[in-house]
Image (cartoon, rainbow, N blue to C red; front, side):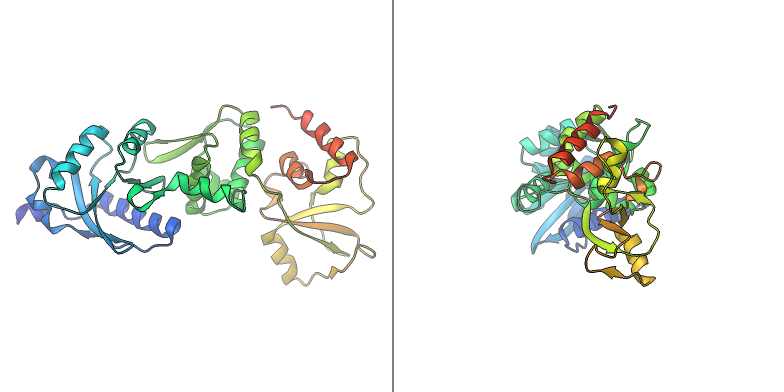
Length: 335
């Protein structure tokens, strides 16, 4: 009985389990409740020293979490041996949980088909057909091949920023105005399609890539046209030049007769609350307004939209002059 009392939740363990539950909910839209495993006292002392154990139900299947108490490295071979010993008491499904696992050890665990979860980073549960990275690969290989707007915003930020240090979800959340959880999911997407390298340093995940040219080349096929909708307006004061108006700033193409500007969805909603009047055609308009999936103000320079988003907004334009101007713009980029 004393041994059982020894394994009351600590603050750190409570935090890890909370992250785990949130991870299930955010990624799979599944609510998971975990409870201390009452038979843990029947295990060997060294297993009790290494892990805490919790029962949970996953898609109506009883499962056992073996949660590492520290970030100390335990080899995949030893973890498998520990699982074998635990199976002498628990005859069902076991999932290994640790706050951080090296890339090398994750590969070894996958090779051994041993299910594991790194909350906020990766979920590999082969018995249920779940590998989070594979989940994103399949998602992007069917239908919509584009990254989410938040993830794309993170890529564009990495391309336009002047500094070169590794990025973290908290840094991107602060810079881009998203929640830390949204940027955590963005990191999951980036890791899932292997854009750059994501590793864990302490409690933080860090995203790095060889150089901006490599990042652009690898990410480009997954990036979407930022333009969600185009409208015509007679009044208003947008402050980010976009479209061919912006392209004329980067190339020798002439600006269009009707100026083009951009605004994000949040800005557009604010404009609608102010009662802006959308025109059915360009006949009486003073300018064309592009509504973007993310905020163009985040990446503008001197009031002009960034060249990467501009490229994505114009790459399907069939006008040969526009295509030539886009090529001219990209050739001028200093990587």
